[in-house]
Image (cartoon, rainbow, N blue to C red; front, side, top):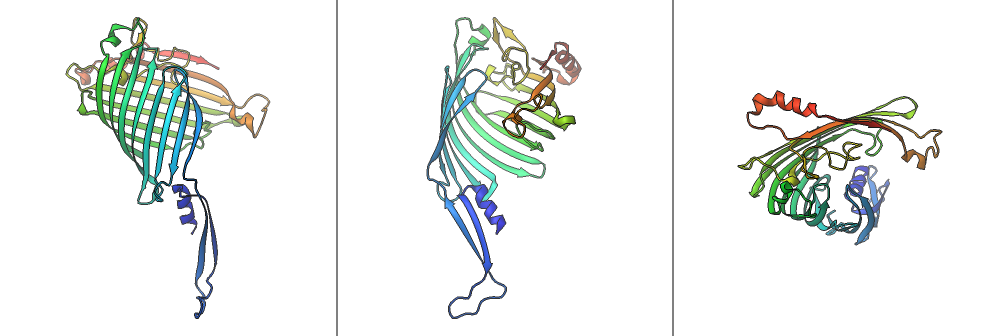
Length: 353
């Protein structure tokens, strides 16, 4: 009975689910079953329509997100979501998605959706407009959670500044990407925002070229581990890296498929997306990157707001390092030592509190 109650709650069928168990009562004209039970569920239905308004701070501007949700759309735990995002600068977008559990399992989800998004990338001097559709399935395993996703995106790149570098300007126009992506995550942290113990491993693989004019293979990996120390302090180690290889005849990847590095979310102390190749002030990104960080978190001095609001704040000491550059893929097996040396030669380093 408890397993069924928890399943109904995880599926989002009802707002509240109560379970009541009693001995079986006799029906008219019959004797009660001495080994029988009556199980009754008391449920509170969800509203047919929900939604909300929230704010988000991104790498370039702030935005307001409007959401409309239709929970339990057809009575089998389906969800239909509509979103509209409007930014303080040029970011706008909207999307729709339909999500359904498979076999009544709240951990196995299939979804389809469509979206349109427009955003400005001032560090590279271009604006991008995307129209896309996607289909994905998520499921757990004994090794972690898996997400298989197909997406088709029609992308339009246009220059946003008169000073945009020619290396960016020559990529203006339309492109179509059709790709398969697999994401594997194993998260054993005790908290996703401010963990004090546990580790996270995340691997993303993407293959583009199933139609369209964009072809590449891309790999990313992320690792984080946390260790509790004295006086509720935490030591955190982070590692990340990625590589993308173009499958185009000219061997070049498009700027929107490259990696970028720099800024408070990746490499503190450097300009937003400012690390690596650039031309005339426009960041170009690169096909390979690595980054590492050592972080030491402690509670605020004298512990104001202990056990409450004050626990949301930490003092933070950090040491960041990383690099972003293009490597030589021809004769890769023979030049891998040179590539590793190049990635270490121009390493960036920052530290602070």
